[in-house]
Length: 468
Image 1 (tube, one colour):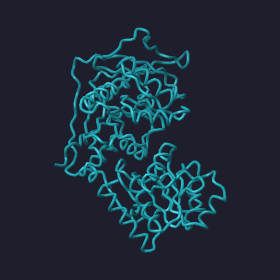
Image 2 (cartoon, one colour):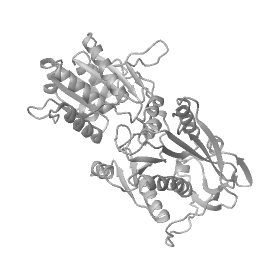
Image 3 (cartoon, one colour):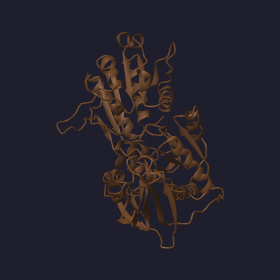
Image 4 (cartoon, helix red, strand yellow):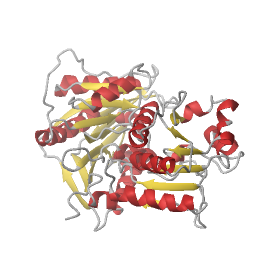
């Protein structure tokens, strides 16, 4: 199997470092660049050079672990299922905690190479600040493994705790032995150029009794009004608008690439099912659903990976490391707002498959943190990103949705959120859907009405065709 240039360079650099006497190597490569194949090639080279006896891999999820096992077996031509006679195994970080002393004794009797996929999950440089996985690494692997290879596309943690096995410079930046960024990946057609569309509204009114407050954006609404981000992404009309924009783009992409798929990242299992219902009822499109509650979630993902079905909705299943190259469009509707998660979700649509390397498209609400993360992605691309605002036409139809402020128990109100100037929804009408009703938290509550009379605007951070 022919490697990409960056993969070959990284393998050679790691070999030189290991042969010089060092035993740890950290590779930072943008999500979707092909870290798994690089790691498997390095393992194969170390086996052929008789520098190791066994290969052990840890990764965040079962589906990533399974993919890693397949890739290791393909490159090494050895079984990696952990059974008698195998040259290694691929496990999840969760399973690390269940391994007994008999397993860890292998590090004393054999030369073991350990691969850590998405190493940022493992925190701590001492037992005092380490999480459970970091503690296991410190106790059993650090100093015991012949070689360790750490992989990441997002080399930081939201809790600011040092990443396990890592060293840091004086400015608290992590030291990486090899870096392959998004700009190079796009230039070399390893990753797709992302276009990020941020949805906002410019005239919002909030009525509390006789008082009316006006807001010009989601950012202002979320910072000054008693409205949570969870309430926004649970709003049927906002969901439908984002779905419609995403579906329109996916339809365009599928005209050239019929197997192109879309990913919708939901906030909860109920949220995922709600989104699937809205997608089918209003747009006439069905979606596969993969959540942590599904017994066959990994099978659902594998079927979708090799199918032509347009949509899959995920809750905590399709994130970092999951390899579905046909994904081209993503609708971001999760309440998780960390930069690490944002980057990993974006990475799911950056992978280049067997088709031509077109663009990828991310749609999300213009929540301030997400806007900042999108701008940082744009800044990483040479020659800067093309940013423009688009405002919807005046004849868009307004609709109203009511929702209880159930996540704000201290507020004795009922909240009605109205979005004005939506485009008329097309698709399959459903007369069985009742008009949403306001829900009173207490009998003596007062009404809080949020009316979005303004036109929804789209801020597009577009990064296509920056490299000739």
